[in-house]
Length: 423
Image 1 (tube, rainbow, N blue to C red):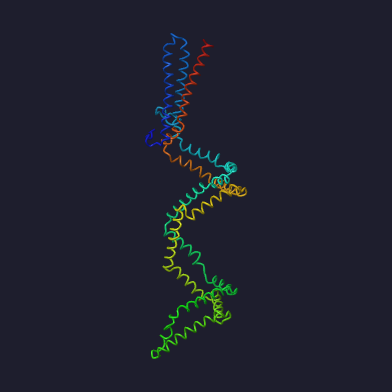
Image 2 (image 1 turned 90 degrees about the horizontal axis):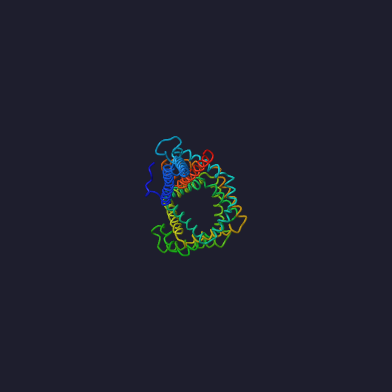
């Protein structure tokens, strides 16, 4: 199996590889010690009979060491490169291991009762509130939220946002008919006499304009008179028209029952009825509505409004001292205080979080487990084997070392019993 170059490993994996090599050396050294003892004892046991015990212990130690070396090696690769059946278990059964691991997680961890029991004992709301009520924590969360919000705003396409706004406006504002709704609204206003203030405001505005724009009446009528009319008469006509307009507006202002007001009321009443029942009036309003909203100027104003709003939001989100950021931090701190001190709110939040977690676990537990098995299935067998070996291989080398010691003790015990009873 090809090894990953050390330079490509993470610092943690490099340390695990070093520790694994050390333990392999220790286990191999123990086997070497047993081999040396066996050779010495086997050679001299005729001369020194007590060395038979040493030979038996060394012989058992070598057998234990070799057996456990074979067992440990068979997990990761073929011993000595020989394709012995039931060896190289991890690379050969990688996908099955992934499926089994996924099923184990799904059955034992992603279980609704397990999740509910764990969350019920976690005091989520109180813990979150205690953390959030700290000003530094609230400010940190507000900063992260502002960063995320600014990132979303910058990622949005202006053209797509404008198209979305246009589509929503057309769906909810332009496509529904306006005439009957506006007519009914106007009818109720006139019936309730709620339009009087608007009429008074309009009349007052006309009076103010007339008082400050007398020159606008010069030539208003006289330009339409024959050229042979003397200029004195023309000025007289203009002055007369102006003064009559001022007196008329003043009379309307002063008299709540003025015929002009009654005429306005009658006109508004007719307009309200026509908007609801006259097809021609309805069509004119709908055409005017479409013309206004479809005009390039309105679209340009909408685009400018979006750009202005976006720029303002970005500036507020990026500025730690902006009113928006300060209000967000204060709101988060207040939420933390309530979560810490309000038991009823704590129960509601805990119940909602628990119910949501149980719902997602119940609904998506299989997908989450399949994520594990699918991910393992995509791993390269050699890389997977090396990763697992780096994680657990050092501990497995203790099995080799223990096998050497246990084998030596077992060999010694067997030889001692046999020697004692069989001579």
